[in-house]
Figure 1 (cartoon, rainbow, N blue to C red):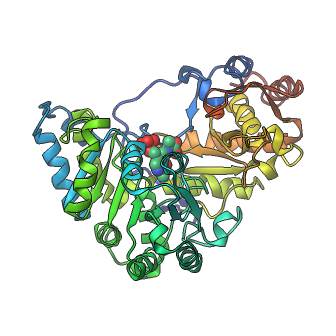
Figure 2 (cartoon, rainbow, N blue to C red):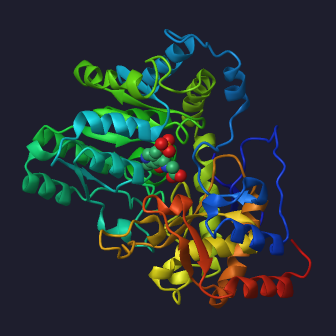
Figure 3 (cartoon, rainbow, N blue to C red):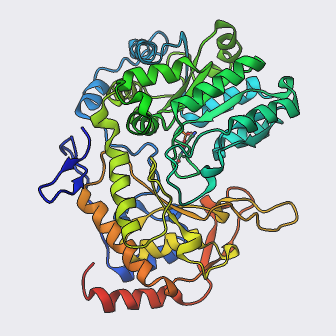
Length: 482
Ligand code: F0G
């Protein structure tokens, strides 16, 4: 089911589910939001969720479950070893992806820990389309380094390239030649590339990567955490795949990998993770680490209830009606913002809508964290919580200088099946208002800056009294509305 066509000729995304359990939301007044943001140290991670109206921080572990997932949780088998729940997941993974071996982990980064410990050696290199924070951290922790070989369009904010997550195959060959195949730990493809705006790769590009890996005898590893979105884009944007079912496309992708790991906080709409492996040899090398870091091999640190939900969630991910909801809502949001002149990452990707804070706030220098500042302004303007993806999320260099990010993005994630279209339209309205009043928004400065992961715990303050002015303008324009 694609968008529906309205009588007016317009297209509209239509929810192919109904809401049967609800959670009450609060939208406190703008003055309260300003106060809450101050108390949270101008860091959206430090807000209390009860003060947030639309939580667009992430799509991780916060997707809506289906009635079938909830029902499956009731029949979970708690046994420590040999749980029937685990057997059901193992069977479902074989059915959908076709790997012979599976290692369960408590979430995606735990899978990355095991993979890096087994495959990365000091001085080795991992070429990839683009890094994800936790992936890179585990590779570096084990003495390796990351080479990002994303196609040129991948780093352009504004583009009509349908597959901005594609790997540049020439750069991959050059990287292997330069380092020598012996130095390559593995080649990694991140499907639905997170940090460049949830942008997809094509099946064709992935097949070309496989051919290069075959030529040099290298392992091809896929981070499939955002596979659901990428499947939708392959189906709708890649002409050669338009008549294939989601199951067929999934199998074609999986057949190209030696290893596929995922965060089930995203793929499967529950909470957990794991690693699918092709060969017994590799499985045995990794197996010992699961009981050490995660838990016994038949639960891997996950609750059995969550495992049941993942099994059903994976099955539902093979349904076009399910996987198109997120990307279609994002496309609606991106389209509406573009029409109002707001700078966003285009074309619309998966995961969420990404606002280009560098252009939105072109008067705020990168050293005053424009994406972080925009995040605080949007919360004040509308109770919407986003996530900074820019300089604030980087670490200072050893001399204490800022590492300026390639992009200053405010990510507004679209958890799957969670929001209604009117809530998304409300967010669009408040962002548009903020854009009209963007000259009021100023930068931020750290008042408490932790040495590591400063974006999680750091506290900041506005550089001037710009937030007070923003609150006053809100009252002028919206009267006593929330
Ligand atoms: N790989 C990708 C592509 C991810 O997006 C994430 C998580 C992980 C690995 C790690 O998985 O959280 O289960 O340990 N992304 C979350 C986000 C944190 O908000 O984008 P995890």
